[in-house]
Image (cartoon, rainbow, N blue to C red; front, side):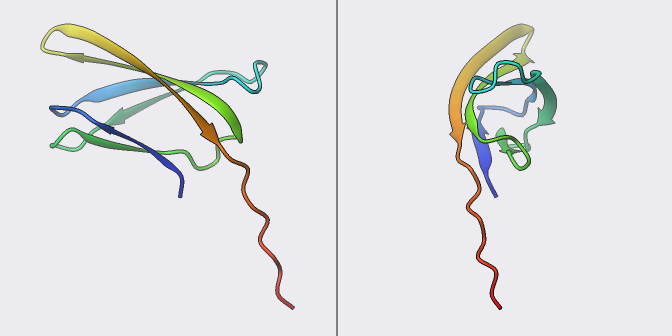
Length: 84
């Protein structure tokens, strides 16, 4: 399964804005996630359209707001051959 991984120095709750740059008419998807206790966060990308994407990640820690941006590409699923 396709995933996106983040590693923080502490546990966090994040909000991610997913924008498909290949399909500008597609509505931005906003999702919330929590890391594990070690700050590790794995985001499943299953069900997202193939193409170029931008992920804007926002979180707060110790009274401060943070954000980062990550661009990524989801390749089209390969068709599975049907055995007869």
